[in-house]
Length: 260
Length: 260
Image (cartoon, rainbow over all chains, first blue to last red; front, side, top):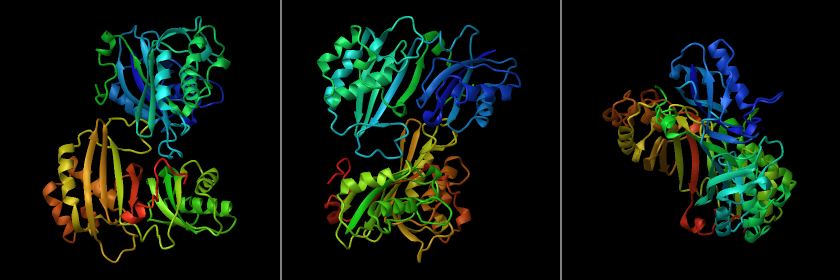
């Protein structure tokens, strides 16, 4: 029986989503917890990977369970077996052809900075520090360059598996609230390290190390080294995974009403 | 030379503010760091204690330094010697009679809850979970009972040193933003555990375990056991310490401009 899970994690001390040897990953923790709960091996398929140190407000994964289990029991039971940096927020029974990765039509990432001279420990786990000299207006202007269907090769870190580096970014927007600065990026799919490379490039523009006018040519066969550095993982969060209306309409990921 | 420090800490793994044997406290960490930086013993005097697990956005302390040190160097130098759960946000030279505790005229605490069925690990360090059945309107109404000059004996945990349990609460207000619920409490001074006892009592009212009408008699010689339980430390944060206008006017605690 196929189930979708909405999973949130604080990535600080985790080695990312994807199962790997000798490092604590989210996928492995959730698989272990579910296997123990279900009494038989459970594989967890996520909507995509997140890198070490990156957070998720709502990653989505699917699992197949042999025996039926009420969704509430599934959520609460799994959570008692997970470290407190990982929580299943909700679960829902899904059509058998639902696939966390292949059914997804888009994702929203948010990159967070603080513009305080010293970032409070209350915020430092989820925010990177932004240089006080950063020109935020210039930074906001630069976000526009990234919207559209482009070759993001210059923004892809090594190690990703992709046949083309062309991606469509449908939203790239800077939101400011006092000393809190958030970059919201949405798109159908992303290359490895792409959002953090965009964030790092925006920082370069904001402090005058890169010119706004030079950004366009990064999309004309630019090398990774020409774009800005990869921004620190701590600032990045996978906020949401989007699915087609007919799946969302099934109330797949109820917020605040997970107990169906 | 007297200096004031604005200090922020994530209390999760700290044993509170006050120096003690065999446990990591904020006061001890800051004293050790400053002593190492200054090359001679430095004592740190805080505006008051916070309990184990409680956070501070801006605790205030004063220190006397033998040799002058630019405030920026004091902040940055101290921070390199502190664990990442504690940061000095800013420093300022103060008149010799400034006293972090005795010059203070009030404090603002905030207690935070999440009303999500499962609290995300992105928020769980700073928010307690609130029962989904809580009646928030009733809870908001109950906050009014706490405003004024009252005998808070029923809200004081054992171990505090005070000659009278009468305190004046000048603000007690519930603010809701989606699934985020914040209780803002201001007053001249607080008894040990007082804000968490108020928070715990409000929860009892919200879920119907205590009647709104019965709260008033808690101030008429009520016992600690009659009020609600002490709410979890993780939800409480010392947000701000207030000083008289003439001291605030000295730009003692510049926010976002700490480099004087």
